Length: 427
Image (cartoon, rainbow, N blue to C red; front, top):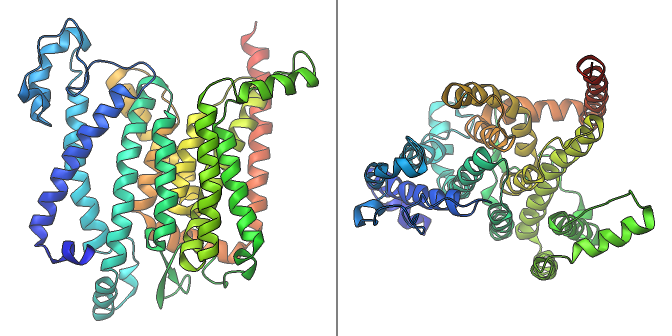
């Protein structure tokens, strides 16, 4: 399939990708307006408002249809049609650009460190791998667009986006390890080879324990933890620990969706066990995706717990946890960590733009994480090959202790700020 695609003329590929971007943008718009907590009758493929004039065939033509739907501005607000139009147009441009960047010019590779002929040879050999990475990132892009704009509108991210997205990432990683981005090796010097960025550091061989029951139990534990995190969990301590446990267990089965979640968990246990038995790159890819899920979601979950406890209020929604878990499953734990640290820089631009457009200074954290992920992908060579990997190689396990210390310091600072704010503004 990849060979057939590569055999097509480049301009034709760009046109097809632009069309796919338009269609993907139309699907994203449908999801944004119908999968949210409070659906709105805006999308032309959804049921229209009772007060709206009859829909016309031209209304359902991507991009162009939004100009004709502007006649419903009195129902949905002035200029409501501009954002969905820009989403479809933006994806029509972004998808070919991403393809060109990742597959045609080797934007993920440190080609500037190689001589001309060697760089050309590396880029040629990277073609198949680059196309697989692009397909993975294209799917992630559509998911992040839908999640971002629902979060803008409602400060929530639906599980209907993050659960299927995470499952797709895990299955894709089990089928091909080439969905992970390249790491230049040796680290910090002219690269001799490019390795998939799995959970293991490139300068050390994969520990044999990950091919034993230790690896299987780790994968099953992460999978079970993710499924448990999706359940309805409420720990209410007002009436004592015994009642808290009783209410907690009752809450897990309060909604009928627990049966579906239990089914997903059981199927996942079987599939993970099968892939473990197959072994090889299939197991390495799946375990890397699971560890990316655990690190991506775990970092946000830990911050949520610490910040909420220190501030006495909920610091961020759990949708941010499931979103980052999905992102980690797609790109691995290294890229998830980088995306988290880049998110505040993306937030500066997003907050300024949001304030100029809507005069609202406060926006949810999900768009920051998605923007940080996009920055990580586009700047992969700089942030990973030239920064993260050399620092990990030099500092080793000290990085983990440094991160834990930063989490603790954050909790202390938020706790102190909470009491300062209460003392100053409570008067």
